[in-house]
Image (cartoon, rainbow, N blue to C red; front, side, top):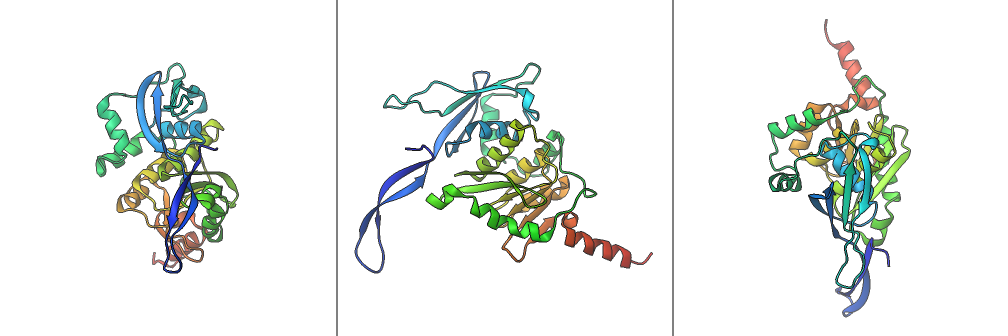
Length: 290
């Protein structure tokens, strides 16, 4: 059986008819320990699959690597469950010569696990300083509103694991023409994004200029941070962003959209990358008195 899903017996109840026993398909969730040079670095709960992409993307989000050549190797470490089966739940990363190892103390481990434990001005400054890329400037290509509005449906069409389980998030990377470049699913929305960014790193595609990151849920500070560090200029979410996500997007130059519902969308930061908003802004500038 695939480790991506597990089957469980459930009792289905309803107002019509009696209890029914049936088998349900669940998205798997297992821990993944990341080691750097044999030393523990972080642990995350994830849906198994695309684990090397997940680890690579996580290291980009942590500012450890930003070029594929900085990853010398990724390998699963030996580990067995109670029945003697390989767990594939520990990955050791060997960084290339010259890449500085990050601090792996317990204090830092706790901080990375909490994601946004010191949210506020200090954390926004840290994100800005840690970026090797940052999103493309507003003078670059603009994105059509029709393309942007179509992305949630295009993302949903590719969510095969969600179709089976109804229990995972998705992140999709699209070009400005609406073409799908990469789609990943996971029980953790941040993991799904890391898997996309890790794929891009390993394919030598960073920075991700002229792309849109479409996510299936809300837009948190952490997702804006990950998009910014990968050079993604536009992040679009089906649901709402948090206040700090909007603040970070505004200060770092990233276009942040939310409540993308097919016929309408809210742009919370840097609307100038959206063609229709850019035209309106230009018209207001021309109409303004000298």
